[in-house]
Image (cartoon, rainbow, N blue to C red; front, side, top):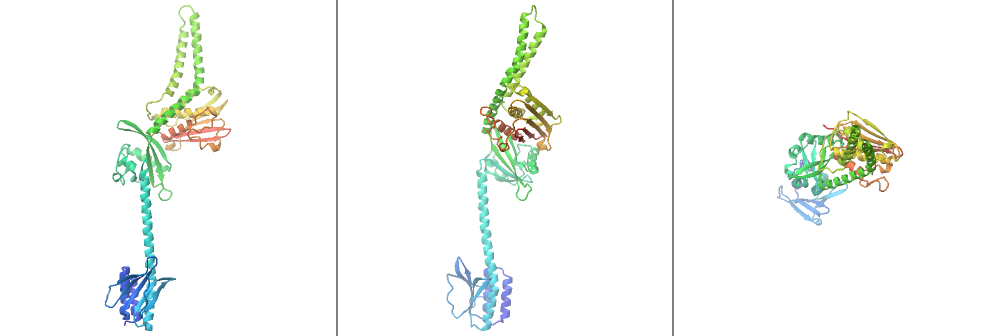
Length: 492
């Protein structure tokens, strides 16, 4: 029999340099059996929830081999020494030795049991942690698959780029969309290599604007596919993966061709409604030159000989005046076959809007103030749509001032490239209650009395301004008036 200290030391070294769980425990059992010259040494491992006991046994002549047995209950002892393996109130098993229970041997078995207890406790903790990690990994994978399925089920095209402009996500709609690029051919590549319809510098500036400002950018793109013109609404959304810094940009593309056709019809209806508001003023405006023409005709009829040239000049001038009035209104009212964006000056649009507005029957009772900045930059836009925005804002301002008041139109240079050009329409009318200011851009919402508005004008203004990459703001004080501010990106 080897000395107790030698046996305990050998067991301690094995536990400190363990390689595999079962192999280590088998070597401990064999070391203890040889050192005590026991017939067999068994470690009964307690496994609550699965089996009650599992055994690793070192019988005589087994060497480093071991036998694993699983039992529902510990078998009865047969002249053997059994010592519980306990650690911090928890029982992890029973160490059994079939030997003559001399006092020194009993003490050695108890010491080895004390050495095994924290080792087995750590093994159980490792198994629990491994199980928990495996469970969490499965849950994460299931959540990832579910999220991926949701993204692929969206009826819109979606992709995500990181700060290196590399595509990280590319959903199913993008695979089956207009360009039909497979996910494997898109993910991991620079977005400029995949999306080639738009110039790389222009596309990069759109992403940089989101990274820089942290604001959602929305705009529309017109694409010709197979000879058919289609419209897509693009939304670029900032994403913060960790912390406050924007790490990715999500791009969502939606085919709005059908909606765009309906929107054009609604815009045309609003134009005609504006023409209706101007009709009374038009009649008055045209009646003046018609009265002058009538007087000239009467004078010519009463004159003897050839009519004086001055009468003919007056008639010609007044007819041209009538033509200008009707032409300007007809041009404004006609639906456009297509919309083209190009350089537009806000000052020119303001003057054109005021020229049309002066036909309004209440316009002559208002004081009009122009504050136009000659240095206001030009923008890239659709002049006809932006003219409709200004007309809608000015007509709302006129309606807000029942009898008299002041209409101020101001243009200015913005503070940033995204707010490069600013136009403001201010009135001294009744104002808008604070509770209603968040609803005025909703379709069919109006503060006007029945029969005086459709509730679509400001909604259309919001859509037009947004499609130009700008935004529209309102500041109103009840009883003191309102200011509508349109901010648009300057032309590069």
